[in-house]
Image (cartoon, rainbow, N blue to C red; front, side, top):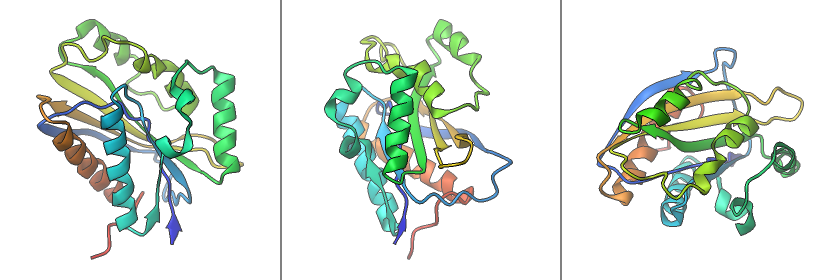
Length: 211
């Protein structure tokens, strides 16, 4: 069995409509054959995080790919406090020691009706740095109780990072997705997963599931 685990840092709410806005792949990467990646969801909503990571894990299982959830790798205390760059470096090293070589990170970056927030994030639209930097910029998501208020259209990102030993720890792929009119968490998770799986298949980052 080909091993793939995905680190997916996911912040998620529910919606009735999802659409792919951007599907970017690093032009320097022709083929990225990850051996082990971990799925992590960045969100305060534990039910949404568990459903997202579990259902995405099943999608990889259907493709004979071993996937792991962040819920099974990180202990409960990991999200209880903010992490420093040194602590995140240690996390990456611990993943490398466990043979992980990729991180798939999903988060909500803003919404249409939070103009001041969107203007702040606009400067990062073309960000193509490391996972550590991305996490540090966004970890307040775990602690800001007002993060979800008054959101009508969510702008989300799913990003695949390489943390390969002996290689640059760079961004491999990024999908930007709009989530409109949040109403049902189960439908949101299902629709979002279908969309990112299809996008990653088209970019030859995962194989299409066997018939």
